[in-house]
Image 1 (cartoon, rainbow, N blue to C red):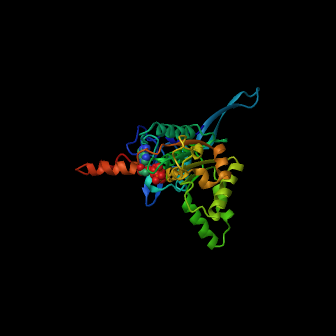
Image 2: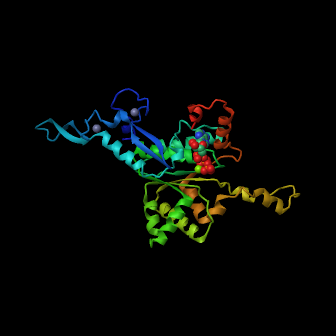
Image 3: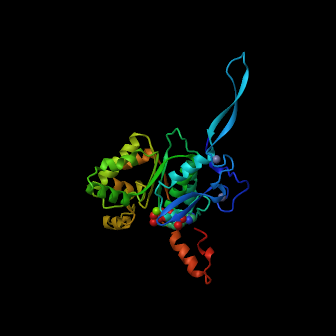
Length: 317
Ligand SMILES: Nc1ncnc2c1ncn2[C@@H]1O[C@H](COP(=O)(O)OP(=O)(O)OP(=O)(O)O)[C@@H](O)[C@H]1O
Ligand SMILES: [Mg+2]
Ligand SMILES: [Zn+2]
Ligand SMILES: [Zn+2]
């Protein structure tokens, strides 16, 4: 178990900057980046050597009896350095650098569920796998990307996994650019289909062109076939039964029903049945109700109501 290795703060006592985590995540331009906290830069366990001698005792033969010997083992600080470097490869956006499970707020019971599904997934993650992922569906500004970011940070920095975050339209754009440079779609998708944990944000977004659908199909099918863990967030609804929900009183025309469903599009209609069917097996579904408050708006309203703007104005982020 090396889940807690990173939590060892060798300077003793809780650090005011990292709270004992030994690393800090902050926004650097458009990216979330981690660094080792000042309290842990100089490792007091190995004094910067990166390894240390530990005493082992073992009985090799009954005749000789137990023998003590020393072995050189890598220090926890090398693990820390490696994980911080890996975090910086995840590709999480800077706007959610502050995101954690602790600072996620629920305005709806479904948000409590979203948080606990994500937290349970992160804390119970089995390195030997397979692990069932999750998909968060909900309106804008409800903390879906926030929870993806908190989950990936835990998996990479505390569990030691390799992970990637992709926003779907940026992925399509990257592949298109790759095509122009003479690369094949598979070449670009390859690393993403093989990474241990992948988070795909904004699922269902895009033009739904054959190129986009084929790309997504290939990526998800490859991950599904290899039993790899994938997390998703989407603005589209997950409830397929809503599609069949027809008014029962007979007073509504088909047109009424159609317009009522507008802006309420279903994910399976966006990504197609092949992909949706695989998602059902790969993920726990969490749907946030349509009236879940948009945190971007409520925060702005709260800030504009505060007559005296202070630095702490954004401290709820
Ligand atoms: N429930 C929440 N608790 C704490 N912070 C939140 C919550 N929801 C959103 N935020 C904050 O609001 C901002 C926007 O949230 P986020 O990007 O996670 O929303 P989203 O659900 O992914 O929206 P979109 O559908 O537009 O992508 C972020 O700074 C995030 O940390
Ligand atoms: Mg988002
Ligand atoms: Zn610190
Ligand atoms: Zn060390």
